[in-house]
Image (cartoon, rainbow, N blue to C red; front, side):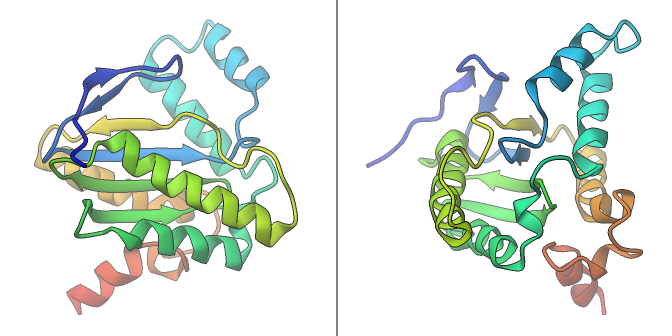
Amino acid sequence: MTQHHAGWTSRGYLPHFDQPNLFQSITFRLADALPTHVVAAMINDPDVKTDEQRHARAEAYLDAGHGACYLKDVRIGKLVEDALHFFDGQRYNLLAWVVMPNHVHTLVETREGFPLRRIVHSWKSYTAKAANGLLGRSGPFWYPGYFDRHIRDERHYLAVIAYIHNNPVKAGLVERPEDWRFSSARGWVDALL
């Protein structure tokens, strides 16, 4: 069954732009990684005037490792990694990715008939059920929304890849991007050698 791409949409969270053959940077996070009161404080902070500033603050909060950080469990990190790769080359092209302790960054190229919202839903639905089973828990695993940004040009594309690969370094988890286990950085370094 062919799915249609919706263009600009929102379900009460963040707005999303979805069309085929578009390069998209996507971030999604665990349900407890960025609490509502922290988001409200960011929104109401008079020093934070732009969406870019809010996004940077949210990223810094996530990188500080708040919440249960279930993704640092090797079983869960591998589960998410495998889910990202499962339909790579079929429903989307996975270009870069990193699984952080409490959030995930990806860069994908969307394909005709496979809307972004369905791709992200597939990743989150499968991994939530499996991770909750592995952890012996129930309840929300992922935050319901996700953040996406379409790639404007080659410079933006390269900056997003660098951001994704350097996120574990920026968060103080490793010294070199290729040292982080759940990242495409290692594959990029191997490809250059």
